[in-house]
Image (cartoon, rainbow, N blue to C red; front, side, top):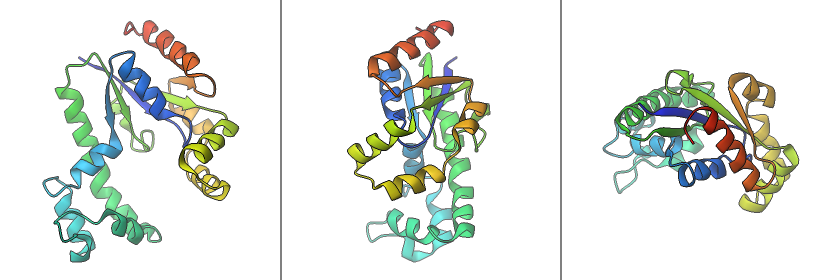
Length: 197
């Protein structure tokens, strides 16, 4: 049986760094909900038909794939439509993640999903890790790595769970504000406690 860790946190905290460490240093299998979301929307995926029916023929490009940017533009200002889209995608993503976890032979699996807490992944994960970084560090990373403006960063942060909500919903906290070696040491200590390192 695999031990499944759910990895979550706000934008710019460095979840990708933590996932890379878990994979490269500790042999974890990494499952990204975004990646699974793309798979289920492919022409042979279980969400292709319901999504194309929801948005009509304009949502399918000439090559037979869904026009994801166009779909995103349609739901951007339409909460009801976004709710319907999420009602198709999120349950399918969760089912596929459960299937992948059950099929895996890895001792350790790390699942990263933006809505880990809101979508109640506690029936998938053995525990949740909140990846934390102070706001100054997060802003610097987002400006440097993604070229985001302060306005865009403000808007993204405002649309995410608060630090208090993340801390309340997770069993462990990894402080990823400093050097990568510090983060690795924290992970090693936690995994040792769990008998996984």
